[in-house]
Image (cartoon, rainbow, N blue to C red):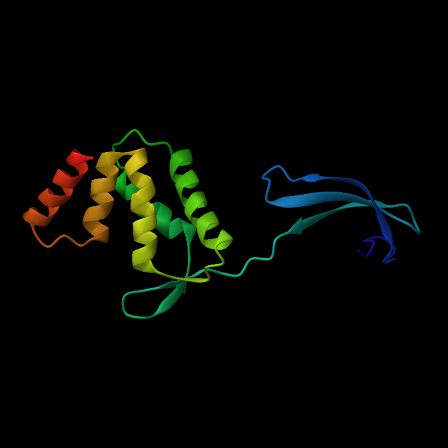
Length: 150
């Protein structure tokens, strides 16, 4: 690590701990040459997750886009934004932990539904109606029946 003051590339680690968000290691360092203390953060290098759309095009996974869909599904429901953030975190962690760098949009929809049913059943049905693209009321009723049978 190069000292920000003198440019020396030798330093010693004085303190090491996880960052507040627990996504990095925070290290306090001290320059061997001039004694200046500085902080560095080590983070896991992450490859972007690509979402493969129905038409075959690819776009980068965007948490905000998924959050918009979930917020729409939970309108006027008593669901905390923290719960939705945790749901997205869980999906993103699952994909990264399994080394998945390309995922079909349909698979993301399945992952959302598997988790959303435990958060709010009405939101589940709302999200499913868009994700599964119900063509008529019968398909919608069938989903409601299967949900009631659980």
